[in-house]
Figure 1: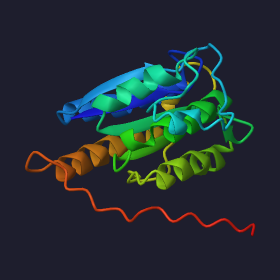
Figure 2: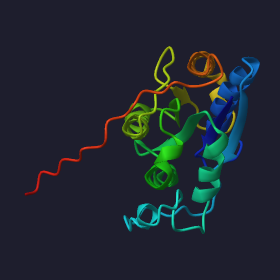
Figure 3: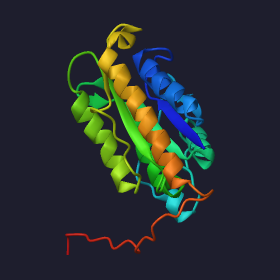
Figure 4: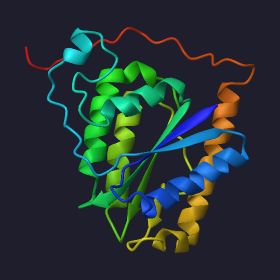
Length: 207
């Protein structure tokens, strides 16, 4: 089993990376392989609702000039997903939201039923709003949201300060243990018996 962790901070070794690393170490102690993918500092396109990914059944975004499709490729071998983001104005990093929206819209079949968790890192406030925003996407994709002992929030501003948040780091370890436990339960016996889904029945309110 493998968990893909996405560092949504432009700072490769910042506080978001520290939080994700704590989860990664805990997962590996439970025998779960991990990979931390960096979103980096290059621009990430926003979704323009062109619907070409679906019309052409691409399984990826039609735009291939940023990191989105590189992350989509990693979903093929990932059994679970953790996305971490710094908090900007009470919201996740804009690049993270752009990535999530394009990734889930173009390659949603690759994440269905896979456990997921959001992690938010902030200086002082706004983390719960950012956390809720990220979780809403997981719920729409039929992804079981993995819980911890508290909301998945870590505090820290300057590089390395997150390591001083004892409760935050413990929350990350608890999250890692809970995700490992759930993955093992899901894959007990060598396969995952996922629930059958009804065909989607969209309801538009403009007549």
